[in-house]
Length: 273
Ligand code: ADP
Image (cartoon, rainbow, N blue to C red; front, top):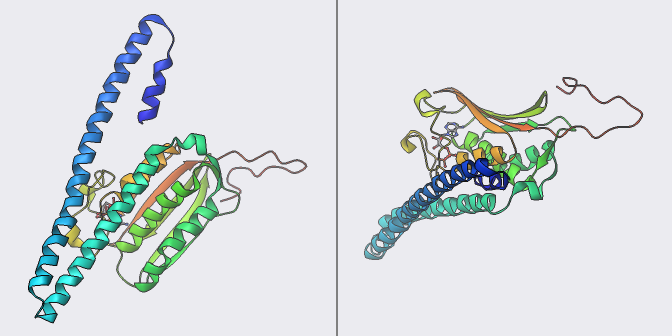
């Protein structure tokens, strides 16, 4: 990101400085363009449910002598309000992400706690749809980062796994150590993602045909938030999916080295697997 580009400016010497500044300007312009696009997209995405709410409330008023019609309009209003609420929450998540440098607030974060909180957020929705939600992490896996962001990121993956799965299926969160990295995977038995869509799903506002699932209120921002969080923590997020049978999203984060332990041997890589 943005912040890195700015920090490159301090290169001290002669002609190199010029080159560096030019790169910096180009990057600044690119970021500017991305911002403008983003604001345009947000405005559009906000206008859609707001416009629908305005029309539906008019419809309710003029159908007041037909209780069945009123009921149908009110239900649609509820869905639009839900969608609007999700969008606002995603925007809050995004602006939080961009408003502070994660490195200045970084703390030691235990992944087992992140998993527990992320699962907790999805528990109610999963139970209502009879989806089994399981997961845990081996103890002692610690990353340097922002706890709330990590819960938001993993929570988005778990939320999607539940949302895009039929009833009576299973969602599993697994954490393992892979050398210097922690791999946190979220596996579902849901509708999957067509191969040609895989490379676009992490883009802001990109949604695979909403008609293929019963999920209402999606914003297309969830995965772009996950990608952003992974990047600010020095990691990445990848997806593996088979349409019709399920998906696995994997978040990889650099682990914080074990603190020195006196008297006993430190655990070797692999022992914790
Ligand atoms: P949305 O708010 O639409 O869920 P996301 O950015 O979280 O936005 O996801 C983008 C798109 O990727 C979704 O619209 C959905 O089609 C697809 N997707 C994400 N996660 C899954 C999953 N676990 N199973 C199937 N499709 C998924």
